Amino acid sequence: MLIDDFMDTLHIYKTQLELAGVDVSIFDDVLVIKIGGIAEVGKIVGIISPRGGTIIRKEYERIYTGVVSEEETTINPVLGLEKVLLLSEDKFDLMATLAEIYLRLGDKRRIAIYFINRDVLKNVHPVALPIIEFMATTLIEVEKKGRVYTLEVLKSITPEIDGKTFNYDLDRLEG
Image (cartoon, rainbow, N blue to C red):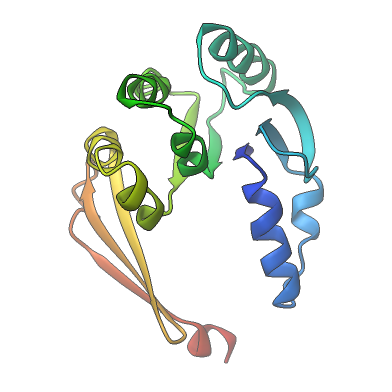
């Protein structure tokens, strides 16, 4: 597993889990590429400025290539992308940042899972969310009501899960 951590989002998630009483020791050994931020969580394999551009893309690729294997697939959670999109000064800058995502589509070395706060994007860059959803090979919306999490597969290139809904009741899982 290799986590792309934009602007300390991993630190926030880890802290929230820790405060909830969850064992967070798993974060000690996870490989992390930090893009911006100052909090150190996991085994940081590279640090990159949150600014976009060719130099940053090459730096990411250098770090990424040094970590992932050609022989096995890497699970790649991407946390906090919406924070970097907030820094976009104009639509051109926003599209350049989104291009970094679609240029990685089809990379068979990884399965990327983007965790994005939709509300943040809707309010600041409403055009970004539909573009991200268009690029996604699988789109899952997570909703929480009480202690029940509902995962709805809005679209998927995998027909077996396309359109399915999954419910996870924390009381049943803990009981």
